[in-house]
Image 1 (cartoon, rainbow, N blue to C red):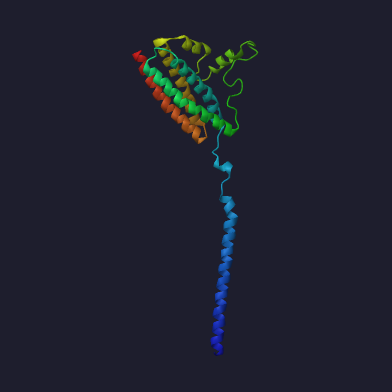
Image 2 (tube, rainbow, N blue to C red; image 1 turned 90 degrees about the vertical axis):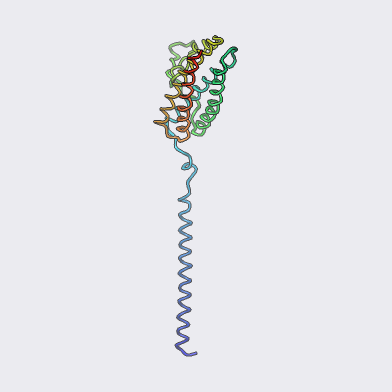
Length: 222
């Protein structure tokens, strides 16, 4: 082998080693870059949880007692005799829809670390100083300041009514009750931030508006 051939072979081998070294260096750099950027691209649990605001909390806190009263009214009418089947079916429908919604609202409030009821005075409750003897009755009357809520007197009237008179009263009261819920839901749609709460609010507007129309039609037949 002559010197020129040997020199050419050495040169070629050097090029191969140099290319391999560059390749290993690039791979190492890429891996390092990938490793260093991976944690930054991963979202934290906080980032994965949708944000909520005060409007969401108020919506949940107000809708829970609102739905609870609607269920109580439905239970009253379902316990009575001689109620038209269409009215009883509507009461069952209201219970079936609003019971699970209460559970969901309570779950969100727990998730947000918020109480399931609003602070005293948030529903225009009368002051304890105004009537120290008002007890729970006075507190219930205060809750009637919420959109569409029935007063103690309203609930007693429904409890006392019988037959067709009870059915008519139930429908009239529930129309008012639903109208209040629709207004509360529209406020959530306009001001809320938590996506699932806004979706529920849209569902409340749609379903309860339909039920209002159904109740108005039923009233015309009684």
